[in-house]
Image 1 (cartoon, rainbow, N blue to C red):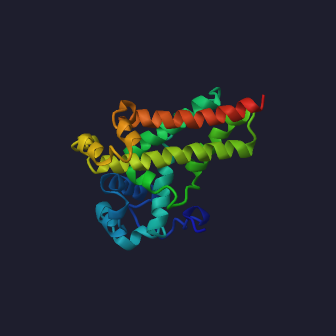
Image 2: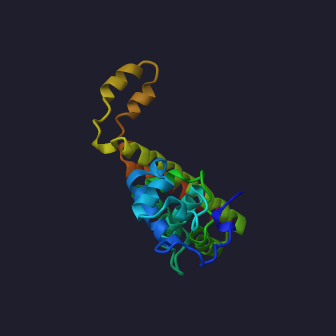
Image 3: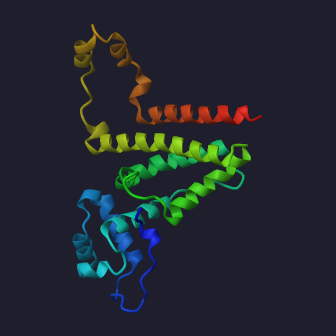
Length: 226
């Protein structure tokens, strides 16, 4: 596995004047927020910074390395759990923050699994989640698996949600439920009845339901330890 975090910083002598890794990452994040992963190029980034394209490579070896750095900056926006927070408060807070940051930085949530998330800010966030779960009596392995499982739910939900919103989402004309019902009324009656269930048609409500299911599963494991 290659990662920008495995490399050593280049010496300060000989660096192009007026550039820094921090400035490059900040500008790259602005461009990612505005245009997404597919539109980012080192040439366009250099133009935005008023620098020669090759000068960026003194600070970041590749475009993928730059994206790794940007991903880690977003993890730094997560509020960490307080020292007295119980595990449920900590987990719910983390998952709501993940969904919020997915809306703020759609490129970040879409990059999950495609790029490494082993930077210092990502690791600090993960490490901070262990303490309240260990206090609840979970083993380190069970705590890590619990966080991974519930994060997978939040990531998957958030990716689907940001993709839905990107193509118009709530601003698009609603689906014609009557026409859908006419298509499937005879062969799939339960599906047609489901179309009239209001609670499934709110994005926030769906997220809360899934989060509650995940939390209930962890609660059952914690209760079994007592």
